[in-house]
View 1 (tube, rainbow, N blue to C red):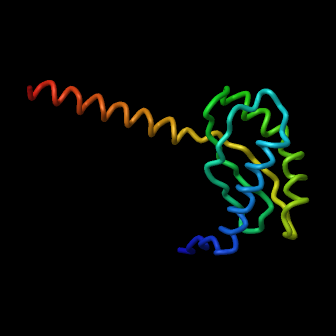
View 2 (view 1 turned 60 degrees about the vertical axis):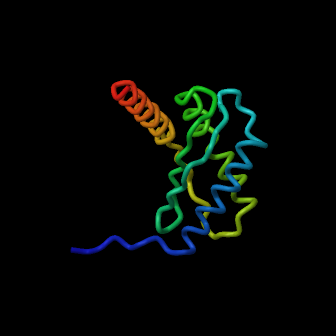
Length: 123
């Protein structure tokens, strides 16, 4: 059974740099009112750097509208990355909404609720 090749150290460095530069581009140069307060959670690069899945979460704004706006601005953002990065291939960006922070907050609330009800029962 062939094993999947592990991402290289260079791949992690490139993804990290893309995440930093992209965060800056979104915050400073993207003027679309549909984009809320975005936090980039992770960047997954294909081995040939042709494509990047960009996972983001939101502090404010509508997830669907932000997703549409970011995907529409992907070419603009890729062009901005091209000017900043010094790599042969700047990936095509694919934005994906990451619900992990929401789920974590929901789980924390459920745990706190369970602990509170257990302490009431023991009183």
